[in-house]
Amino acid sequence: MTLAPPLPPPPSRTGAPPAEPGLLPLVGRTPLARIHTPLPHPHPGFWAKLECLGAGGMKARAAVSMLTGARRRGELAPGATVVESTSGTLGIGLAFAGQALGHPVVLVGDTELEPSVRRLLRSHGALLELVDRPAPHGGWQAARLARLREVLARTPGAYWPDQYNNPDNPAGYLSMAAEIAERLDHLDVLVCSVGTGGHSAGLIGPLRRRWPRLHVVGVDSVGSALFGQPARTRLMRGLGSSIHPRNVRPELFDEIHWIGPAEAVDACRRLARGSFVSGGWSTGAVALVAAWAARAEPGAAVATVFPDGPHRYLDTVYDDDFCRTHGLTAAVPAAGPLEIPHPRAAEALGWTRCRTPRGTP
Image (cartoon, rainbow, N blue to C red; front, top):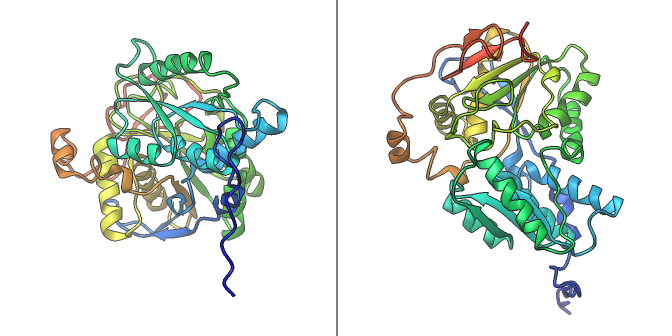
């Protein structure tokens, strides 16, 4: 006799979606791939954690951690609405966590958010609020946060995870650190993209305890204010910031590299052609720096994280017309970065390295 599939849980009395806790085991446990593709120069290879292959992407780890932490402390009531600002990637993670835990999700984005990502988020049940102009100070992030506060004020019982300052954000990446430590016998260099500071803060502590001499390289975007550079309008999404999240801790990094969009695009496209695995702006940026680190220290074990896959970037990074319009196809990246003595010594306009990320000497 064939048994009928079990009925889904009934809707909550608050109108929230039913929780689907069976989704939670799908988070994490992503593969660690060895990358040898020249980017653009040959290198000995580095390890890349392929977070695009986990349900909800890399930031599902942070989203689940922030919501479960808030529920445990009584800050997030069952079925209450979750409201957050996002440039896209955390939004996908929160849409996943909202379904798994039974919470409606309202995401405050901006009109730079790709149409494909808007459709994806709405398909997953999230409601979108979009701001149409950046704030005079703080850019798109400040404008999104101002709208977020308006949404909170009109939504009774709503909870704001505050990804920029919430310690449960980095705590969500402890599982990733454990997965890396379990897979590798040794690690000399860790390369991390930096935006809200979540995954870098979550990885560095436990991996440094495992390997005390671990050298940590942060990768930021040109035009980002995170490490003392002037804030500018940025083409790249997912790394960099015009504000200063508390989760970003400059003292954790041994050096910082700023990467420009043309350099990230070149690396993304080379990865797609040569390794099949690729991603967006953050992936291209960390891949370029990880390949350089592996080349600079032959024999060193180098690892990084590819935060997502290529799909949301088909109309930007992988679109020839977009890249030509924005001047992203003209030159092959240099073999290495320009060096500056401290973050305020000169404005980074392309690949730039600083070995004193904590500030001026």
